[in-house]
Amino acid sequence: MNPLKRLGLRRTPVTSLLAAAVLVATGTAAAVPDTTPRASTLGAQAAQSGRYFGTAVAAGKLGDGTYTGILGREFNSVTPENEMKWDATEPSRGSFNFGPADQIVNGATARGQRVRGHTLVWHSQLPGWVSSIRDANTLRGVMNHHITTVMNRYKGRIHSWDVVNEAFADGPSGQLRSSVFRDVLGDGFIEQAFRTARSTDPAAKLCYNDYNIENWNDAKTQGAYRMVRDFKARGVPIDCVGLQAHFGAGGPPASFQTTLSNFAALGVDVQITELDIAQASPTAYANTVRACMNVARCTGITVWGIRDSDSWRSGENPLLFDRNGNKKPAYNAVLTALGGTPAATRRAP
Image 1: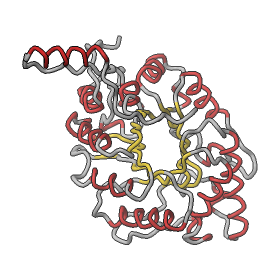
Image 2 (image 1 turned 180 degrees about the horizontal axis):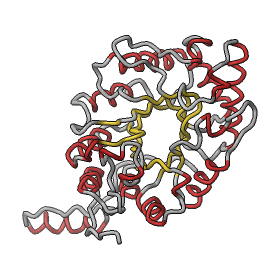
Image 3 (image 1 turned 90 degrees about the horizontal axis):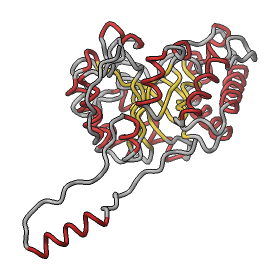
């Protein structure tokens, strides 16, 4: 799908201008009401500011009517939760399986939703045959072949790709983590992956995605920032940074908006890519969404699952819909932060 176009200033309806003129002419002091239409679903409201609001989708749950009902109603973007990862798409060398990923992409296309591709190069959920490679030329060839094969499968249907996922180490080093890619190919494997991705699908947005890079003062955040700054300075193709935003009950760190702004100032879009918040505090969710809305180049938000029962953190009830598919208070907080108007709550059967 074509990327959503960022909307500029909304035009004031002619009727409102005429009403204002009458009030001025008669000397009546009265405020002109805001007639900007407000949506009652997450995706529709996000689209009014040129953004998307998406969710992670699992192919195995697409037969669940409650799940697909919410998916089709509320979201204008989807991310395959596991179906595009290496162990799912190329479990053995040169043997590709795209069935579950096709199901998600085809469904999203039919619903008019954009798709984020997740993920091409990641040290986890990696088949043993890849992890065991110790020859640099072999691994480089395998990595490039995997990227080009998967991207070509969905060329023209993926809005943005998480090209490399979670490459930086936790802790104070600010350096890349040990992985088969870094250990065999060196730090340059990330640049190689991005250059291969750009040559394969020049129209797709290319993202670096990671967790625990939301606090501006953390060494991991600074390491990712230095990498993006270096890539932009040297012309390495990178279009966006994904901040996963798996938060505890307190929500985002105080510096979250600063982090978004600082990455965006490098000339890349920023996206909140895997949002979930322990216990789903409405305030914490609203603060997260407002931080994105306050940064022009924060182009979209994805929650990592639909109902609490669908979450990888299900014991923490971190999502916007409860296990029965009912909207939680955090849902209304998010819709309001996006600029929308919550509809009357209807309990799911």
